Length: 252
Length: 252
DNA sequence: GAGGAATAGAATAAAAATGATCTTAATTAA
DNA sequence: TTAATTAAGATCATTTTTATTCTATTCCTC
Image (cartoon, rainbow over all chains, first blue to last red; front, side, top):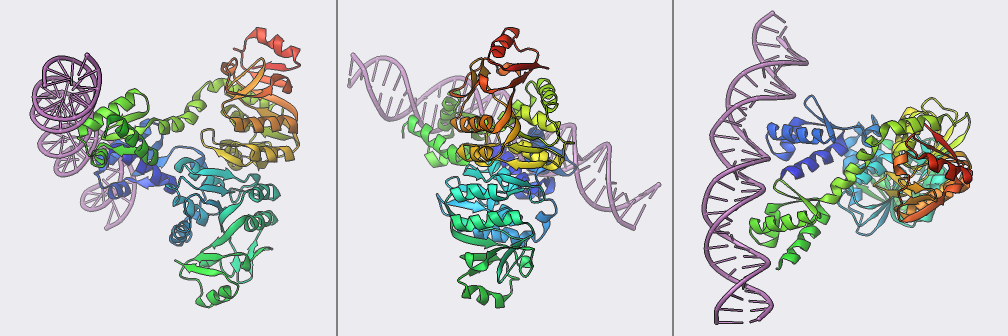
């Protein structure tokens, strides 16, 4: 591995991790700590990173400004697995939709090498990540800015979704059950309902901890989905319920 | 395999990989490292690649990474002044538009305490800043993502602009003159033309270094603007020209 | 087929990158 | 407080990379 490759690897890691320790880098890149230090020194001289005690972090940019703070650490491994599994459904030249959320962000992490796809999203963090780390065609929905979720919602967001025919949509949620998805805000309902109309295939991505929860507004029936990707803690008994409504459950 | 074929092969690999090591190239092309080095030397002389220790990189990648950073530091003081001056035009309860650019970002910096206004923008950096640092109502245009400018462009972006009636729009540009604004990409033309139709008052914010420059696509006549905010290096003689077209020039 | 230019590879020396080892500083635990 | 742990930097032998030069080969042109 040549120096330039390492520099990129460091930046790539930072784009998913906020801070990376020198120890982690020596293991991952299999070089001595001195080499890592020298790499960091160069990147810092370029203004691309700033070194902190024991590691590095990205310089201020929309990347660091946009961070799904606490959420990112919750059920992280499940989300990573779901993201990987979802990404495997994406074929060359597809147009895909990534709904706002940290699980869908994990899907995005798996798309850095797919430069022949087109991605539509309403999530600022996903957009920022793909803007920097991928070469895919990228569309952002726009609309009313939802600060809490760092995304765009409302009927204005729904407009652009309606204008684009998607091959597959990955929809996230913070609460769902055998009857369908619910959300705490009406503005998200418009978005989710538009998505299922625009996409040929609809896939729900959600870790099992959100199953059984309910929020104020009903957004979508579970029958809208072709498949659900979730983790192994999902109750076995519920798989049948979903199968009855022609929803395939993918456990990973 | 003749040299020209190898050159193309190297560029092809780079288009998928960003960095390619000399070792990888010697294996892939089955020639000695010296031959690869000479190939790289030619490509580098042509400005198509840059050689790094142990391999080559595309020049383009560095370009795009630097473009935004360079812009932020260029004529910074002028931009800060223009931003302050522009912000003074904003009254409570107004709906304003901030066009993509670093000068308009300076306007945003002056808006952190104005929580009674509504801001519409197509710039990801501005959106990220206001999302975090202000409490104003915020709308994002959406549309095709322009990586270089970290913004949204195209007719999809223009759509949302048309849907919102704005009290004042602050439009930026990288090239303008007595005849009007021009841009290097057609996609931005749609956006700018939609803005002037949707806004009651249009204000051009641009430091004087951009005056006299011209890009491929004509976007707007200078007569579209009610005022121009620029710095003290703006040529005095041109103030009259603009006044004849009912454009007020504000120097700061 | 001779002559000459362009190209490729080998040998070598210089320069740069790397890793091991050690020293020093900062932090934490006892 | 001291001892232990962790991080940072310095130095130098070793390895890798780079640049230069020279030689052999190919491919034209005449």
